[in-house]
Each structure stands twice: as structure tokens, then as C-alpha cells.
Image 1: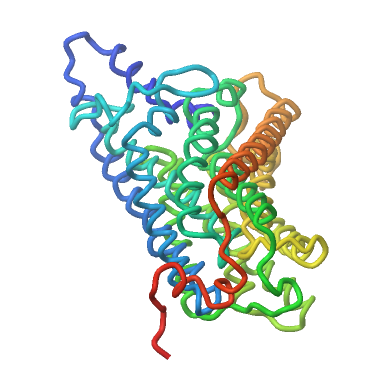
Image 2: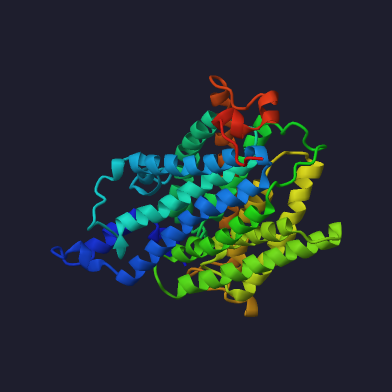
Amino acid sequence: MQYRNFSRSAFLGGVALVSEPALADPISQLDTGNSAWILTATALVLFMTIPGLSMFYGGLVRAKNVLSVLMQCFAITCLVSVLWLVGVYGLAFGEGNAIIGSLDKWFLSGVTSSSMSGDIPESVFSMFQLTFAIITPALIVGGFAERMRFSAVLLFSALWLIFVYAPITHWVWGGGWLAQMGLLDFAGGTVVHITAGVGAIVTAMVLGNRNGFPTQAMPPHNMTMTVMGAGMLWVGWFGFNGGSALAANGDAGMAILVTHISAAAGALTWMFAEWVRFEKPSALGIVTGMVAGLGTITPASGYVGPGGALVIGVVAGLVCFMATIWIKRVLKIDDSLDVFPVHGIGGILGTMFAGLFASDQLGLFSGKGYAEGVTMGHQLGVQAIGVVSTLVYTAAVTFVILKLMSLFMTLRVSAEEETEGLDLVLHNERGYDL
């Protein structure tokens, strides 16, 4: 059951090579089918951020801020790509210790057309992992949308990638301490969704609510754009979860199947919950439920079966729906685009459900089974440790980063600038000629 964590580690590429005759050509280890699938999955995951997430978020903000959101997602894609090259790949997947990798992969040193990670080229493995590193800080944009300065967005994203994303990725997928404990996180419940959700709500609280929140209505300006972006996310998620098998095999196929089931169940559950609560189902509700179902199945997608996926999707739609109302209406925290209640809560639920529905003793709801000698109680304990450690570390470091940044720069636009809109104030452009 632990193949997923260890296959993420660049260390395994070396193990695979030394197990062969000393004079074997590394390229002889290449599996063209697996490589072709991961190349395809890489394109699908990048497609999730640009244009999928960009359009999803862009439609949800007010018209005066649509370009600012698109710009932030696009710029984060570029920034993370360069930082990944410079050293973040090594910090996440390089040989190091239980906490952090190393800078041995500085400027992707040693990554050539013939270097391997398992049975796929290391260049493909690195690029696939880069697309995950891109979308995670981009998700946080939804927490501070419509009020953070562009310069602050860039610096925050860079620091957060280095000091939050890279270490936690190493803990879980790079052979770090959570991988050694046996944490089940197939495609990013802790690494992507909990970190992004917690990072978003901490940032929202540090910056403060948008002017007029919660008394003033701030409806999405273009639901057509949002629904189109949601569709792109759904399709791209097949690469996100299916590609995380790092092979074109039955594990990838099952991951895609359970991903689709959970997305559909989450969408329908949120839609019906909203229908009961507010008397009308909305397009916003059904697509948000879809994202909740997708985020929640992500850590469990390589371990659970179709029955478990159905339960996960239903619970995700209902719990994330209630969490969204609670955070906005009771706590009155302006997590603008509901990143924490959807991704954060979804990541927590999914990580715990991975430990539950991985069991092969649940009849129609059975999964692949645990590692030899592991019980359900033990696995759930490991999952809980993974959730709590990721949540606490992310919250603490995100808060420190923002507070340190505030000592020498202004994080938020002024009230007047916020009223005018970030498109004109920060970029001297407008999304629409009205």
C-alpha cells in the first residue's frame, strides 16, 4: 500500500538502477506506456490552473477584479516554474532528511534526457510534480481575492512555496517522516488541499474582510465563465489523480473512476442541500459541490473502491456545504471564494477517509487493503497525525510569512483602490469594455 509515497521519491530512481547490472543503460528501464500517460497527465494538471482554475475563480469575483485574478493565476504559474527549476524540486524530492530534501537538484542538476525516476524519465516526473506545485498556491488566491496587492501576491506565493509546500511535499511524497509512518495520501489531500485551504483562510484573516462584507452582496459577475472553468477542472482532475499512480495501469484506471464518482456525488449532494435550504438549486452550488467531491477523493483515490468513493462524495458535498455557511455567516470570515471550507475541509475528510475506506473488509465499500500488519485503527491514527501536523505547520508558517512581509510592505490595497477595482488600480486594464 505504500508504493504511492515511495514512488514519488527521486531516491527510488537510484534504487531501480543499482538493482540492475552495473553496465545497464538507464534508458533501458524506460516504460514508454507509463511515460506517455504521465506526459498526458502533466498537460491535464497544468490545464487545471490555466485556464481551468483561472476561469473558475475569474467568474466568481466582481467584474472590476476579473483580470486581477486571471493575472495572479498566470503569474503564479510562471513564478513557481522558475523557482522549481532553481531549487524547490530538490527541496521537495531531493535526498535529504526526514524534514526537507536538499539542493542537490539545484537548477535541475543531473536531470537529463536519459536520467530516470523509476521507469519514467526524471524530466517527466519533475514536470508532473511541478504542475502540482503550481496549482497549490494558485488555489490560495481564492482566499484573498479582490484585496491583495499584486507585489504582495508574488512575494507571498514564492515564500509560501519554499517554506510550506516544499517541506510538506517532502514529508509525504519525498520519503520524509510522514511517508515513513505510512501516511496514505495518493494525490494531495495534505500536500495540496489542506495546505491551500489553511493558507487561504489564514491569509483572509490577516488581511481582513473585503469592504462591505458580510452585509453587502458580492455575487459572481460571470457564472458562465465559472461553469466552464469548473468543467475544465473536472476533466483535468483525471490527470491529477490518475497520473499520481505514475503508471498506466489498473491503479490509474481505478483512481480516475472513483474521482469521477465522487465529483458527481458531491455535485448532486450540494445541489440538493442548497435546494432544501434555499428552495432553488444554483449553478454555483452544483459546481462548488463538484470541486468539494474532487478535493475530498484526491488523497483516497488510489486506495478506495467505487462504493467508498460514492460515500466520500456525498459526505463531501454535505459537510463542505455546511462549512461554507458556517465560516461566512457565523464566523464572518471572508475567505472570498471558499477555499478552506471546500479544499481545506475536503482535504481533511479525504485524508481520514483514505484510512477508513482503504480497508478490504467493508464489503461493497472495500478498498485495496492496508499494508501487511496494519490495522484500521493504526492507519487512522497515522492519517490523523498527518492532518494535524500539516494543518498546524501550514497555519503557523503562513501567519509568520504574512507578518514578516507586513513589516516592510503593504499587503492590501486601500479602501479607495478596492472600490475602484484591482484591474484598473494594479494593472491599468479592464476586463470588459462596457
